[in-house]
Structures are given as structure tokens and as C-alpha cells.
Amino acid sequence: MELKDQILQTKERKKGFLKAMPESTRTQVDTYTKLDKISKNYWIPIACGVLLAVVGYLIACLSDKPGSWIANLIPAVLLVVGSVIAALYIKSMTNKAKKAIALGVPDYVEELNSINARLLGLEKAEKARVEAEKQEAKAKARAEAAQRDAELAMQKQQEAMQDAAKAAQNAKAAQESAPQPEEAPAAPTEE
Image (cartoon, rainbow, N blue to C red; front, side, top):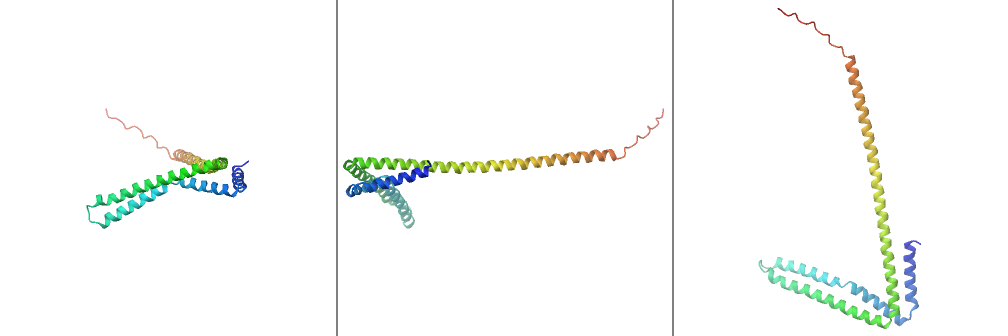
């Protein structure tokens, strides 16, 4: 069975699983899912705090008198520290809430986590398969280009050899058809 079919089946299984549970349990599981997403994205407040601190620091440094960069650095550092503390607090609170929900409906949470883990694994495998196909197509295209280049080079080499052979034949024919200089008689020597 193809990975795409397995992914679709797993998604359908997840939908069926969520529909089959009682309404109160579904609400708890939905809350658990949302808290899990928030817990995994705890770094977003940190990134926003750092970005705001850098922008604020640059604006303050450009608008203030020169030499007050240390005074402008203090609020920026406090903003970064505050965003880190807030992010860690959010992560801690969401983890505690997730644990409380998991204790309330453990079977449903375990099943949901196993379905999500299988879905994630299948999606990663599909992504790897697609990437491998792309790499294979690129390699095939490179091989075909190399083959064409080799054939072109061989053709040029053969043409060069033929031209060299023709030039040698022309030189030999020119040499044979040129009149040979006759030897001059030796000059008499006086004794």
C-alpha cells in the first residue's frame, strides 16, 4: 500500500476516533491537542521578545543622543528576559494542564498520541520519498547531460583527428608534388 493511502487511512481513523467518543471526552481531548500545540510552540514569545528588543534598542539608539547605548540596552535586556520567563511559564502551565487531562482520560489520550505519532511518521516517510524521487530525477538529468557532453566531446575529438589526418595528407601531397632541388655540382678547389 502506498504511503499516501496509509496517510489518508490514518487521518480517517483519527476522525472516526474523535467522532466515536462522548462529547465531554472530545472536548477534553480537543483541549489536550490545543495545549500540546501551544506547549510545542513556546519559543514564539521568545522570538517576538527578542525581535521587539532589537527593534526598540535600534530605534532608541538612533533617536537618542550618542553615548547612551548602555541606557538603551537595559530595557532591551529586560524585554528579552521577560519574554523568556513568560514563554517558560506558558510551557509549564500547558504541560501541567495536559498532564491533568491525560490523567482524566488516559486511554483516549494514549490512542490519540499513537495515531498522531503514526501519522507523523508516515508524513515524514512520504516527504523523504518525494525528496528521494526529486534527487533521483536530478541525478538522472545530470547523467544524461554528462552523456551528451561526452558524446559531443567524442565527436569533436573525431573531427579534430580527421582534420589532422587531412592536414597530414595535404602536407605529404604538397611535399611529394613540390619539385626537388637538384644538387649543384661541387665547386672546383684550387690546389
